Image 1 (cartoon, rainbow, N blue to C red):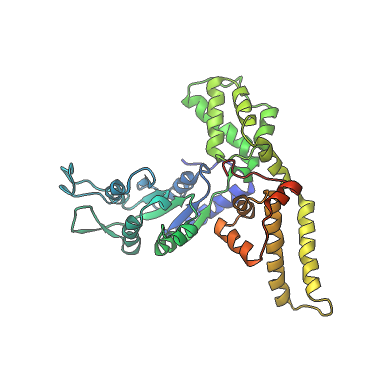
Image 2: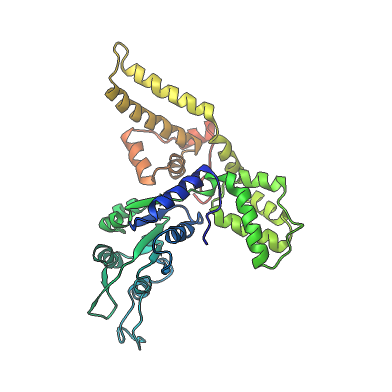
Length: 360
């Protein structure tokens, strides 16, 4: 039985959403960073659905060249290509009655996207080299760490397919947004891998010092990264190697400082006060209508918080977008709309630089 580990508010909301969606049969798009557990969510959806006794078939769209991916998904007839000595059913046929999980959907070619769209629209497809349509009853669940809206603008993802797979979207939270789940995850991984790796961990535990490091760390690799560290601790019989590895990471201090910066509630209150003052300045001699307040509040708040996000990230627009939980395309549009000057040198000189991606 698949279990999503954690009792934090973000995980509670995630579990509730899975319950709401699981019996609908509507197409689901699972989004989130690499390593957050998108496949776990897909399996949980399947297990809580009326299709739970049928097949759950996973296909990694990024793992195969598109020519092979087509035959993997839709199967092929005998003689369809060199080496096809006999017919073979594809994953859609194998998933008939159950669920097919298309991981990394954003890596699928435009040509193959068109064929997938037909399956979603009509529940029929044709094997490679075939002439006869096959009808299937499959629940399609997709996942990606791409910004598909941006891919649509670039012409690498079909807009009509996006609306077909994105009827219900489930965003899986990154580990840095649910650090209170770390002790529970550590305990789970200790139990899982002590058995799998045949190790006695009765005298092995995580020190308060390492827990403190875990809580200060930004976890760019998310739950998968934590899982790998616990495996390493079990195999080595010591936490020291993991402790040193994390502390030695480039920009670890920035990771740690980012946690403090995002808890700076007094600064947020100052920003809200700035929004209110800005609205009052617009109406020095009259009282604004609620409609005017709403319009002005949104524009002034957006401008102020975008500027603050840029200040906190040293002018890094991608990191500021992550801090604001919007797409990179959206922040570029807003910066242009409000005429915001992105003075990196000034931000780095006077502000707190929060490094979100160490490679940027």
